[in-house]
Length: 457
Ligand SMILES: *Cc1c(COP(=O)(O)O)cnc(C)c1O
Image 1 (cartoon, helix red, strand yellow):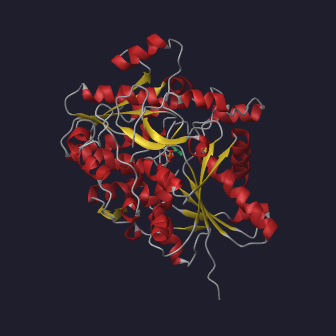
Image 2 (tube, rainbow, N blue to C red):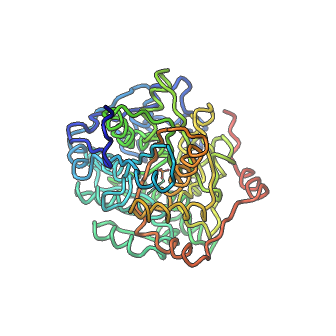
Image 3 (cartoon, protein in one colour):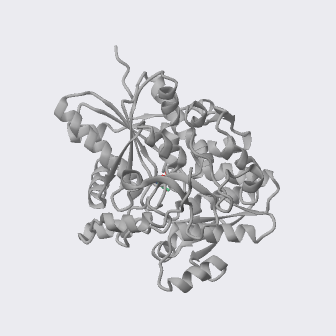
C-alpha cells in the first residue's frame, strides 16, 4: 500500500542539518575567483578580511570542503523557526487538474518573512565570534535588513542598514520593523557617505539602487572600528548557509521516497535557489541522479537569460571585489514600474557557472503574469506569497499545466521563499489594473554592457 503523503511534511529538530553543504566541492569546474578591482588578481583572504569577518572569508574562499559544521549557537537560533514545512500543494493540484505532484518548501514562517534569516544569523554569529561591535549592510525590499536586524538583536550586535530610497519611502512599516529590532536605517543614496554624496551630485533625483546602497554600506563599515560589511545574497557563503533549505527538503522527501523531477526557484542574487538545489545538484554532479533545475527571473531584470557571463562590479561605486557572473552591467537599474523584487544586476557566481555549464535552465517571466499566479496561489493555497516567490509559483503552475497535457505524473518542487505582507503597493497596482510589463530593449542592454570592465580572464 502506498503511504499517504501529508499536506505538510514536518521534520523534528533532530532531523535538521548539522552541516552546511558546499556544492562547490562537487563542481569539477569551480566558479571563477573574486578579483581585486585594483590589481585584477584573485582576492586574498587578507584583502577580503578588511571588509568581511574572517570565518566568512574562509567560507567564501573554500571550494573544496563539502560539509562545514553548523555551530550549536546558530542551530539553537534555527530551532526557533526551523525546520520549515515542506507542503504538498494538494489544493493547487486539484484546482489545476494536473496529474503532477506539487511540493513547496515554505520559508516565510518567521518575522522577517523570508529565507534570508538563515544566512543573517550565520553572518551575525561569525561577526560576534570575532569580537566585532557591529555590521553594515544594504537592503532593497527590506527582507534582508529585517532578517539581519533580528539576528543582530539576538546576538547584541549593532546593525546599520542602508535601505534603497524608493523602498524606504514605499515601505515605512518594513523600516519600523528593523528599528524595532534596534537597527539604524538610512535611506540610500545618503549624504552620510562619500559615495552617496557623489551619486546624489550626479543623479540628484535618483530613487536609489541596490548597487548604490552596497557601496554606502561598505564605505560605512570601512570607516568604523570593529565593523564589517555583510551581504544577503550573491556570495558563495550565503548560498552555503541557505543549503539548509535544500537539505531539509531532501530529508523530508526521502522520508516518503519522493524524488523531485523538476526543482524551481526564483533568482535575484541566487541564494534561495542555490540553497534549495544544493544537495540535489551535488547528487547530480556526483552522477547519482538527474533533475531539471529551473531559475526564474523577472523579464525586466533578466541577468541569466539576457546577461553576459563576465567579470563585473558587484556595486555601483566599484568598492567591492569583482565577480565573474551573468550580469546586466553594474549600472543597470530596472524600470521604475518593476514591482516584483529580484532587481539585482548580477547573479551568484556559483549559479552563473552551473548555468554556463548547461546544468540549470533559466526562464524570464513578466510581472503581470507573476502577480496573476500569486493571486491564484493565495486564493487556492491560502498563503499570500512574496512577489519574488511568485516567480517560482508562475513556472511551477506552467509546468503542472504541461503535465496536464502530457499526462505525466511529475514531482515538482519549488521554493516559496516568503510572504508578501509588505508588498501590498505592488498588489494594489495589480488589483487596480495599473501594473504594466517592461522588458528592456537590446539597445538598453547593449549600452549597459558597454560599461562592463575589461578583464582578460
Ligand atoms: C531576497 C528574496 C529573494 C531573492 O533573493 P535570492 O538571493 O535570489 O534568493 C526571493 N524571495 C524573497 C522572499 C526574498 O526576500
